[in-house]
Image (cartoon, rainbow, N blue to C red; front, side):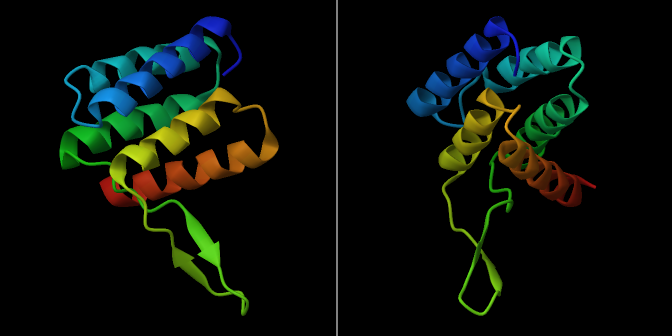
Length: 119
């Protein structure tokens, strides 16, 4: 995100997830507030992935979104096994530096995976 206030909000959410995990009572509300920052910054990708993330948490009580893949020597892709907390933390850290091209590509992969899971 671009503004310092938005990044402070992400850092607050990261600490919350590190301390209490995805089961934290205030996590969905914090993500809803983070979405407001994305809307103010006029970043539709971050607004969408944030909304889809809290909707996924509400619906599944988990964050087992399959958005990370590895490639083997033959070019085949396979899913990366990752814990729910680490999965959300990874996305939040991508969002901290969302202006980086590669990070945006990975955020788009999360958006696509979340949409496929939810709809």
